[in-house]
Length: 120
Image 1: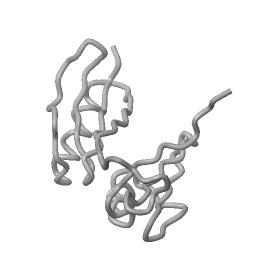
Image 2: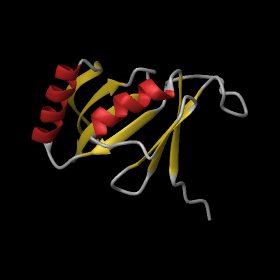
Image 3: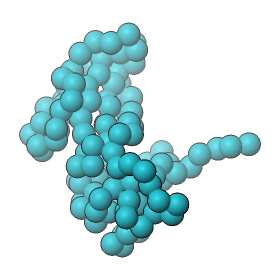
């Protein structure tokens, strides 16, 4: 059975990405080096940032993935959006209603999309 336990993002600078995600997630990485950073999320999922220059086999792209985080309600979506705008995150999609729920999309420094949504 295939049971994913890690999400790996290919990034330009794992140390800079670790700083970004540490502030965003309010977590400290459990591993940090010039080529790799790893967080263990409260859900148990592991989030890694691997240097695109050292990943094997070589990565063909940096950025372009999307991580989605469901939240309890529309007010929480709006509160997170306001917080992330204040932190200077690039917003790709302002809060809006889509068929699956109320949502917005931001970017991390490498162009990975961060979606927050309140499911319908």
